[in-house]
Length: 255
Image (cartoon, rainbow, N blue to C red; front, side, top):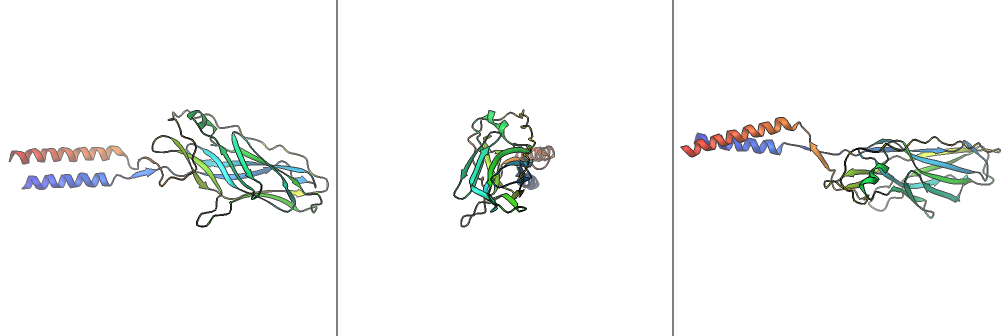
């Protein structure tokens, strides 16, 4: 009877150890939007070019895009807006509602080096100041969320790349904050200042599995990355419990 109790106790202890091993999941990254105009003052009819950067990037693999809406103050002529992608980003722009999506195409493992890890220009927006705009007013461009659909959150996010449980690369939308930039309407206009750019991130040496086409559908849960506690003591404890169970079982059979 004593051997049976010992065996039962050992089995229960082993089950408790297994059930209390916690798994951790990959933390979501983050990034900020930064908008830099190419001049500080502009006269009516002059074109202003805003360069949009992703900055303060925190992510294991990097960011694969930005989605939101452009908003212009009344000093700008919105019929003159032109949007172009930078550093491997392809931009789609809807002139009817000013929605945009600037995405980096990831089709194979060699494309992973295109992902944004450091402060990087992702697109540029050019627009003219209206003729007759009031001198001294601020002409402002902002990046804001797209209008939310019923039951859906507002959509202003960066697309963060990550490895799924199969080792493929996917993306998930990470919410970010709106950003604005402006120039002052002047009689003389301004001198164009070329914004400083940051070199593209250095290629990663991390070996990767062949990634799938980039996907902006958020997963139901974050991918597992390992055991939260040090696994060595846990495994050692499990081994001890198994040995105790085996010895107890052998004694029980000999009775």
